[in-house]
Image (cartoon, rainbow, N blue to C red; front, side, top):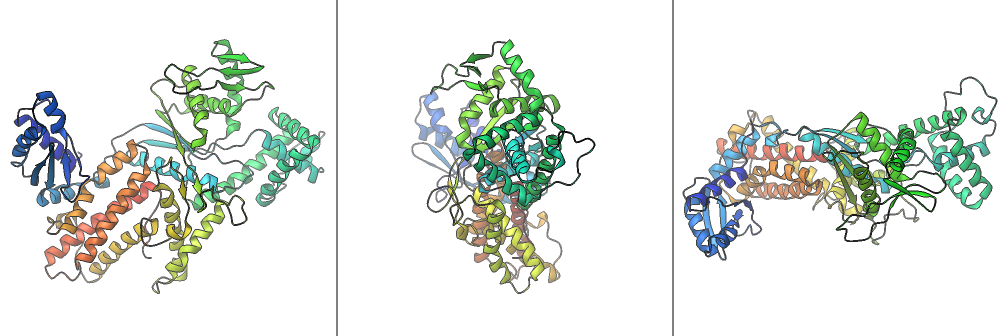
Length: 590
C-alpha cells in the first residue's frame, strides 16, 4: 500500500483547516513556495474562497492559519497580504515522511499504471550513418519510454526505419554501375542468392550520397533509379535479396550506435512494413468520401472550425501515384492497431514537422483508424545548435556523425577521469564512457524538448555546474562516504537511522527527498524529462551544501552520524532512480 507524500498530507491538512474555519467547499491546494526565503510551501486558496464568501482574503487566510497551527505537521504557519498562507514543515513530520518513502519500493514512486504505449522515436534511415540530427529523438524517446515503464506501463519503442522508397533504388542502381556482374542484376539467375552482402557498411554509407549526387546531375541515372525502385516494390527477387542485405548490414550498424547511447527498441519495423496496407487504405479513404481528388492527387481535408490558422489538405497520394510520409504513417497506424492496439502513441520528431503530425493525426481520427480512446501525442523538439547559433556542424562544416560526437565527448571527460590514481586504465575507460554518456544525455534532457539549445562540449563535460558529470560526481561522492564508513566497521545503514533535521542545510535535503515521488510523477504526466534534471540539480546542490556544512564521518555522536549517513544514502538512491529513468547510470568512482 502506498504511503502518503508530505504534499498529500499537507493538502489534507489544509482542506481540514478550511472546513474547520467554515469553508468546507474550498478547493485549496499547497504548492512549493516561489519564495523559499519566506517559507517552504504556500497555499493561495484564500483568495478564491474570499471572493465567493464576500470577505477579505487576509481574513480568510488568518482564520485558516489559526486552524493549521493546531496541526503537528507544521513548525510555522503565517499569513501575508493579500491572503497567502506560508508554511514550514515540522522536522519530525518531514523525517517520518522520508523514512516512510524510503521503505517503499522505488522510494514511493508507485507503479500504479498499466497502459500500453508505443513510442516512435528512431527515424533513422538505412544505408546512412546516424548523425547529430538523430540525437534528440533517440535521447528524449528513450527517457520517456523509461519514465513510462517506471510507473508500470508496457512501453514499446519502435525505431520506425526509413527503409523504402527512392533511396533504395538509388543504392541498387549505383551498385549496378560498380558491380554489374553480381547475380542480383542477372534476369536469368535461378536459385539462391549469396548469403554474404556484396558490400560493407563503410561502402554502403559511401554509395548512397554518391548515388544521390549522381541522380541530380544525370537524368538517365535518376530515371534508372526510379525504375529500380518500382522493380523492388514489385517484388523483383534479385532486388529484394539486395534490399535484405542493405537492411541487415544497416541494422547491425545502427544497433551498435544506438547501444553506444544506451538506447534500445522493442520493434525494428520500417516503412516497408506499412506498404502492404497502403492500397486498401487509399481505396477505403476514397470509397468513404474521406479523400477527394485534387489536380490528379488524392487529398483529405483536415481543417476544423476553430483553427487559428489555415491548414492545407493532407496529400495521401501524389498525382504520379506515389504515396507520401503521411500515407506511410497512416498505414503504420493500421498495422499497430491490428497487432498492438496500444492505449497511447507518442511520436517524437523535429518541431518543424508539426504540420505533418497535425495532418496525419487528423486524418487518422477522421478515418477512424485510431479509436477515440487511444491517445495520439506529438512531441516536437528543437535544434541542437553550435556556438554560432546555427545547427551543429563539424569544423569542416559538414553534418557530424553521432559516433564522432560520442568519441569527442569521451575524450573530453577521460582526461579528468585519468587524474584519479586509484582508477586503473581499464576502469578509467569504462567510467569515461558512462560519464560521457551522462554529459551528452543530460545536456540534451535538461532543456525543455521544444527549445533549441547550444551544444558546448567544454561546458557539458565539466564536473561543475548544471551538467551530467556534476550529478554523477555528487552520487559518487556519497558512495565514497558510505564505503568509508563501512570499511571503518560501521553497521549497515537503514531508513530507521533517519532523525529529524537540526540545521537548515540538512532540512533542505529532507525537503528535496520528500518531494521526489511527486517530481517524477509530474515529469511523466507532462512528458517533460527536463523536470527531473531540474530536480537532480537542486538535490545535488543541497547535498553538497550539507556536505560542506557538516563533517559527516567526523561526527562524534554515533547516532547522529548514522542519521546523516542514512539521509545521504537516501539521496544517492533517489539520484540513481532519477538518472535511471533518464537513461544514465552512476559509476563506482570518478
